[in-house]
Image 1 (cartoon, helix red, strand yellow):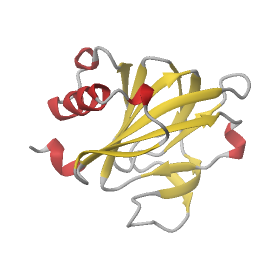
Image 2 (tube, rainbow, N blue to C red):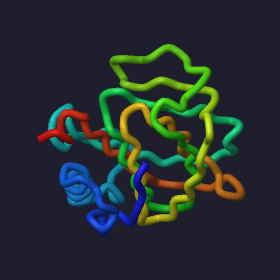
Image 3 (cartoon, rainbow, N blue to C red):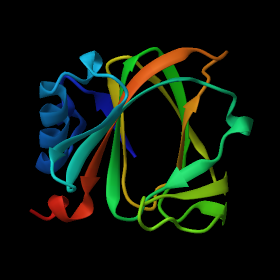
Length: 155
């Protein structure tokens, strides 16, 4: 997991492909878009704009992905994300290959990150994360999740 401020993604030491993905997504002004999925570079790079109400972590499951890097940009509100290191997901359900996700009930040696509006978090493939959790109480957030296919990291 890597985090930083999305208006200065290079300051977090991100690879060029991740910095570019953030800049491309922000150029499409996700803050003005309705919730939905928007292609940025075919199926290799796209963004999902979403609005939701955060909830207590015990009401949520963690997720992890195999093919895509998750770049989560918080546009409004505050959000807690619980996460773990590569391979730390436990009690996992069946892998949904087509949608590239797997839900898990437990993260071994779980870590905690609080995102504020204007910040991002990057989760590499097989790094479990539980986004959308309340900081202190449920609250409305708007975020964009950029999905970057792992093959673009080698480009």
